[in-house]
Length: 246
Length: 319
Image (cartoon, each protein chain N blue to C red):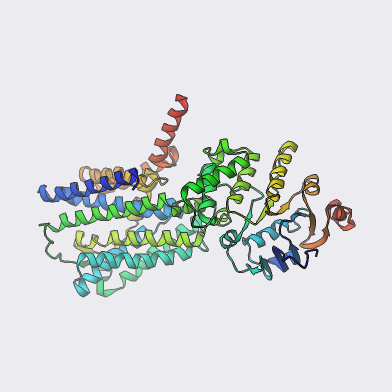
């Protein structure tokens, strides 16, 4: 692993194992992610990418191993406790709060994760700030059910951002988008990364992963088969085999 | 204080004063007898809606909470001749504990499974009470009313006023929840529990809170019923009709706003009282069923949803 000795990793996953019945979805996975890193996570369908994210965000309990965040063992914590410590995520299939407007979706995050000593007016300003960055300001009072696919993806990122994350996990935020929309979302993620938010990006769109990531990890059948710079991983024979299925 | 708050509390005060004046002026007992039932259903529907509406956990156990409220009052009267206030407060405490237990169920059960579990809860408690001799068992028990406390000169009038107080309490709590972070959190977890957790909402804690508050209110509302009827038996105290009526009133009124259950309960409660008097008490169950079906098909968001839709359409038409 490449984390420098001088700097503690932001996230340390140590020997993580997750089973569903007899199926091992994650098998002894260990990886360190440094503060400020743009980390790409790839792998064929069913390789355990989303399972890993669910274990980091707390949606799943793990069978073995630990997750350390800023040197704290967060393995026993419920998802909302992890969110409050600075881990935010988007979902592969967007999960907006459907009975709410875009603004209200963000207010949930601001109400529950942004700390207690923030006034209502400040929360409102923070919300409009985030919506403006995400290009959703004009949709603030629109119901979440009326958004287009790309707007939904952006709203999920905006809602995650409203929790003041130190680590943002983007689970296929670009799936199903047109190429111009992919660029749009990628630019957004880049601009977040430039503001000291560490990002883990799961993606199937390889150009996006290559362009975005400092480091890429490839999972196959719950195991890490390659980790390194994007070009190293792309050149790795096992990665090519996993994807092309020789 | 915000203007809407002032308006609300002025409204509540006017309502209570009107109820009080009515108890002092009106001589005929029937309006109080019928009005008590309507007030009771308003309170029940509002209390139910805190869990069933805001959090989306459909509770069929209203009759369990109501019945426990009734029998708490029965027990306290028979054992200690406790005054009405003590009966209501004790019922609230027991209801809160029951609510907490119900809340733990939400850990493992959602949707229809949760609802079925609440029906089971009703049956278990009813069976227990049925076999409890001290409070009359299956045959039921007669309770004598103590004299009314001044300024009321009649016990039913006093109960009428007490139930009005419970209505105001339930509505104030429900309204507070809706407008606070608790309401936003409940709405989020109703929409999507995992997304809510990952947005920082402590879903279990909020669900427990909603169960405890809703349960405490439902039980407290049941307590005065023992004195109202001067009789209690398990069949009527745990009657599933309380669960169904309360649920129907909340859904027909609309659960997305605190006023929805009030509107639904006034509408259905009044209709039921009128039908009971003019035709028969069986017909009112039939009407309840038909209205519920009509609303589920035609206006799934209830009257509140219907009004919002109409307003929305007019706004769009105007611009």
